[in-house]
View 1: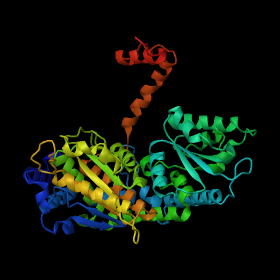
View 2: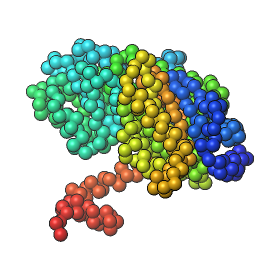
View 3: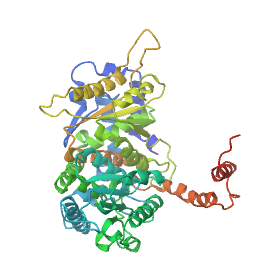
View 4: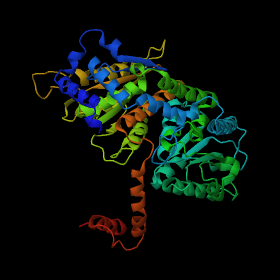
Length: 519
């Protein structure tokens, strides 16, 4: 049992002692930043505001060795079936690796060649719609991993004045597609549908509505072939829908949805920033892959970030973690990482199906600074809940003297300082306790290479924590239950009897079907 292992017991004893030392005291003197900050590809990670000293870090490294983390990292990169419940490898690192002799590499690079060709043709006007007009809008339809990563990257990297604008649709709420289509010219709109099965409810229903919108405004019943592209493993279903076979791009079982933005799923990214910039995005992720695979654990950014989380969640009693990007272009980072971390490591049994005796992933949430400072930061500073946070900051551009950028960075640093040190005011209403551990991640600049490195960093952090907890980070069976339960409820909302439902659901179905009375 993990909690009975020598390394675990040693860390538990260290944690008992560490909580009695004020966190601010650990930062006295000048050497701590140099000792607890670490450089990697286009990134710096500062762990100096973590409640961690040399003894705790050494103990965490012992735990990583005890859990055989280096061997697990090798297994990930060698193509071993690390997704044990589904008996297959997790080869997302192949999506950004240079070409090699493997079958997966051939498929990846041939698909990327096709994606680049399509993007280049759309961007320069050679690829046109059914009426021979160039495209000026892309509508991407997907959900979850087929949606969050591409939207994050497009928002972070795409120029605001681009002649080719991308809009994203995920929610089955009719209003979401309606807003996305508002003001668009159907003759100049290209739809991208991303669904591995081509049967995901939300994506399929939105895609059917988009097709109806297009055909209602077209004199050509075959226009779908010129205006729709699919990324799926179900080629037959896409073609039956009306999408030309040449406009279908593969998704593979050996890549989970939340790891797929590096593949053809990243098509809206390529369309937005161009093939060269997308290659830089892949290069940044690959550079972090290389760092992760080849760097010793004591200087390995994903390993260090993962172990800091283990220390907080399992030994210091923290149960939630905030992602606080201080750059508006990264405002979707918390939502992206929610899926990456909570869908991957939100598990209650280990890889053998045995119930965990420890906690796994924390609740993850967040928001962009400085907006959050005028909203939920009040609770962070004076509330009673424990938490940790990652501050993600982008260094000021050389030679750029924008005082607002300087204020942005100053606010981010001040918030992490306040969370650490607090304010011992005589007035209890003004007192801030402090003592909250945070990590600061600094990107050299917000460019494709640095963003690729950042997202790869978090992917590997999640994997390391899964290894420590002995859970499978690559399945997500929990999301299926709600989907199954929704089908009979949908039929009952349409008029079928709800006799088999619980009392609460039955009553709500009746109210939603018949309307809420004024009484």
